Length: 174
Length: 331
Image 1: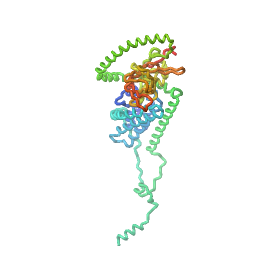
Image 2: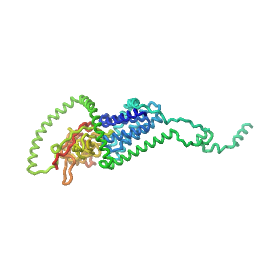
Image 3: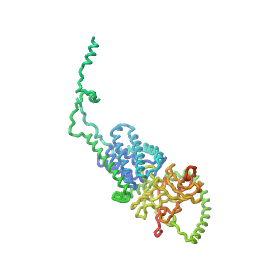
Image 4: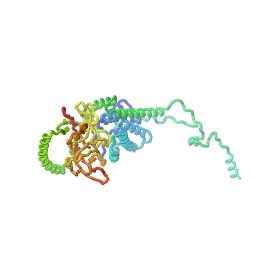
């Protein structure tokens, strides 16, 4: 990743994290709003790999936790794991598959929603399970809707990574 | 003869057990040898990348867990809370700017949404206005009579809303992720006089209370959160209970712990009770409107009435709030 791409990535994540907590989170259709930050994170992870996905998720989560005065590290943990998984999926199973972004977005949304609810419950401040469950279809629909636009935007902003973990030698056994 | 000889030959062919073992792996079976090439000491770029990847994610997860532990155990004190407070102060202008950018779009949506129900809203409000006008006249008589009786009895009472409170108007600048989260962050903090547990209202009614305060921002937990409950009473009948989150949906409330012998009817107004004992007092002043009763149920096996309340404040769409701060000199 070049310095310019890194700067663009950092700026994009910061702006989207701020807009997520101050603007997008007030939108609610059928019980759920667009999680633009998560969609962006998954797009970045798919384009730039697992390490970039994990680091971006951690930083984005930290911004969210600080701005919402929540328990520090909670969103970071969820987004780190989501970014890492999406990056690994993009590097391995999902590469060169047209439906990979959609699968990654849906899986990451499921993970963050259910993981967030579980963490909240463990820390003793949980909403009714039914509320989370009812909001889930709308949250998945939002993620699916934003999937390809976010991917196209992020590809333009931060580009794609060159695969460095590809096998460069073949071991012949004789 | 030939086939028999062939069978005999196959039967007696010695098996090279050292070259192809009985429990051979697929790799040995295909390639025919079990000899592996010695592993070179130099790591390939692929394995280095895998190690790096695991180290990075391991460190980040560990760091997140440490942050959660410290932040959860010491939410208001200690170095983590100090750092969070400083970071929140630094990021506040950005969240305020984001909120201001989004506000025109929210207003446009609300305007378009209100057009759809404008006619029915106007009719309902006209009817409500006529009813309220009659009630105001009756209430004025009651207030005058009440004042005279209190003066005669030298009656001591707790703080009243809104007379004994100052409302600090604040914009909502952030909302947590998660569609079930019932908190908002407002743009006033301890520097403006906000204290923990301060009641928060909107123009429509009770909203929640302040649960975390920093210098220039504060976190407000809404009444629909599972952790929040408020003692309340039915204005019409005086039935007392506790208003807390409803199980049916995130935006409905239940008026719980109301004994079955007390009267509560659909349409009754529920307000904060504002009780006071010799040593303790409610966090909320008496008389803040909470909501209107939408259904009343009563089962033989239940100890209490089952009362659902629709909050006056739109808890799903909060843009601005009033944080109530006690006027100086009040007990």
